[in-house]
Length: 123
Image (cartoon, rainbow, N blue to C red):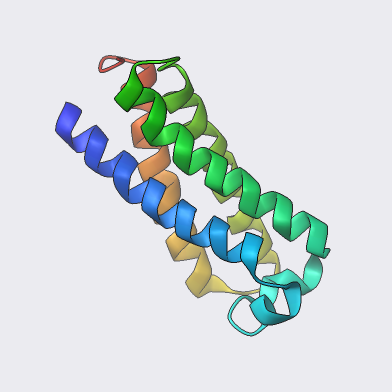
């Protein structure tokens, strides 16, 4: 199970690092073409979401590898799960059903990592 948790955390970290870096490095106007939900949010909010995603990605991996504050791994997974719930709500409100599927998959992975690292497979 430990291997499955590491794989899930790694997949989540890669996905959120890529998405977060994109939000941090591209202007709102450039994101609007591929991510129409950005129309509903200010540029600052989009940057904040990107920063939280990058921090969550780091929090999924670094504490577990270093052994420093490993409680941050399930906390990061929980934070990313909350972000995915809010993202799904935004996509449902905007009638973007195809995006909700990705949110649910990432939410399930985040909940799995949080459950495993808070519970029976904690560091």
